[in-house]
Image (cartoon, rainbow, N blue to C red):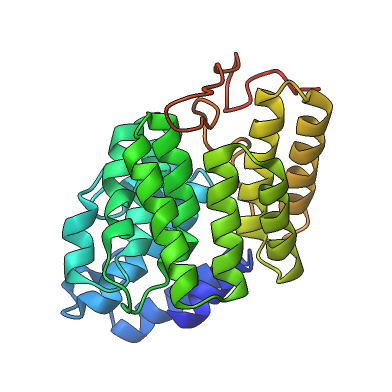
Length: 268
């Protein structure tokens, strides 16, 4: 699983799927979706979670539907049985977000912010997603909890990756484009195109909400260029078709018209 996860974050999704296929072959099961008979849930749940996460990112809805626990899930239940259950929680949250079920997305991902420190999985990867989804859902408490947890993770272990995640969270919470750009540069420097592309999309949303449409289009163009340069990295455009990110309690920006979080405002 470790190699598959490294390939996922590096944007080498075909390589990640090949690692998962090899893992299924080693298990003696007939196919990559037939691991439910394995007794080791610490292997089975992250396997299915990563498979589903890649499918969601690629907008491969057939594969998503075939994955176990299709639909919104109770993140607390999943995390209680597996240290690496965050992958399944994240997959279901992103799928629910894309379909417009923001409440279901928060239910799937929210419990990650309550996870005890020191568990094996690195939750800071998912906390900016939770902040973004919670703000769009109007769940200010969940957004604040996610941002606070990310800050606590930085205090506990101030690695560059955690600091970048905190910049991402704070940029979303306070509509601070400069913080988002700082996070985006970090992910670009360390070769994390999946996270870099997400931050670029968030930057574009913030620019569009402030009516800086030229800058928004520039961020989207960089996002598209980034996705196009990675073999096997194919993502649905404007992968989170919900309302623009809003600040908690006040300064809410109106939703832009059209499809996707940015609508048609920056098309062309």
